[in-house]
Each structure stands twice: as structure tokens, then as C-alpha cells.
Image (cartoon, rainbow, N blue to C red; front, side, top):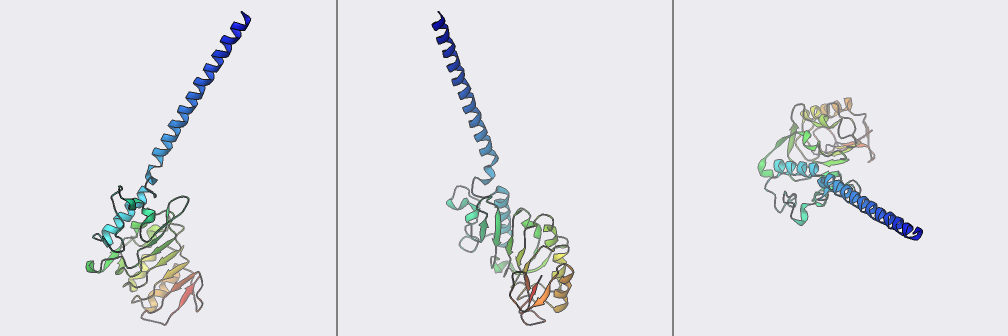
Length: 231
């Protein structure tokens, strides 16, 4: 009788253990499914908000690009190129999959003419470190929509290339309150000396002939030969 009771007890313990194991397994599966759903904004290789932001940029600067600079920027998630971290001009962090480098050099369709920048387009890219807008037929910024709108959100942005555009004296208004840059390229813009000197109120640059990491490039403008202005 005693042996039989022990067997019954052991059987009950085993069954309880099996049931508990099943419950734990189900719990783990639910947690895994939940985490998968939470991370679905990265299921195509990058954050959905950044992917949408890139498509918005394309719609503005080169909406009809199929084979050009932005030809692989597509809204079709079923294609192999749906991963925006693999798109032309995009570099993502290997761990976070956040966009850290964005190069739009020469991406503007010249047939669309010159345009005015709304810098809030880049707000979705929270980890952005470098932005290249060279040769994009830019001529100014919208009032109160210049790079100052990025100052509190994109604290890691420290390299900006605006070379080869048509910024003139109105460039100063684009940088009101924006001072995180370490490298600013303004070469090949119709700038006058007064406009560049006015930027000193936002940046602690000084003129240098050395090509240092922290600099402002102002070559081929209306006022001087090549200069490197560095922090």
C-alpha cells in the first residue's frame, strides 16, 4: 500500500512538472510573439518611421527616380530591396539598425529646379551623424524650418555637406541655434564673406589652412580662396 501511494505521488509530481513545463513553454512563446510584434517596425531591416521618412524625402527631391540615385528607394515591401538600410546613400548602425549616414549628393532631379529646404524632413533619423546634401539645387531654408529644428532632436549630427548648392546670404537663417556640427562644407555656393562670418555666432570656428576633422569648408565662394574653418 505504501509503495502504491508513493507511485501515485510520483506520478502526480511528474504530471505537475509536465504541466508546469508546458505553461512555461507557452509563456515563452507568447513573450517571443509579443517581442516580434513590437519589433515589426524593423522587420524590413530598418525602422519603419525612418523608411517612411526616406520615401517622403524621395517624393520631394526626385519622385520619379527609377534607375537614378534613389531608384532602389521603394515603397514595395515585397521586393528584395525593401530593406532601407541597403538603399543607395544609406548607412545604418549594425546593432540598432538606425540610419546614421544619409547621402543625397546630386539626388535632386534638375528638371524640378531649385528648391527651399524644410529640415524637419530629417527629424525621423534620431541617430543621424552625417548628412550630405551637396549638389541638390538648394537655395535657402523655409523660415523657422532650417537646421535649428534639428538641434534638440538630432544631437549626434556633426557632419553636414551643403556644397555645390545656391545658398547665399540667406544661409545664416538656416542655422539659428544649431551648433552641434564639427564639419560643415559650404564650398561652391555663391556666399559672401559677411554671410560666412555671421555663422560664427552659432559655431566657434576659426580660420585654418589645415584639413582637420573639425572644420568648415568655404572654398570657391564669392569672397575668398579655399579655407578650412575648424572648431
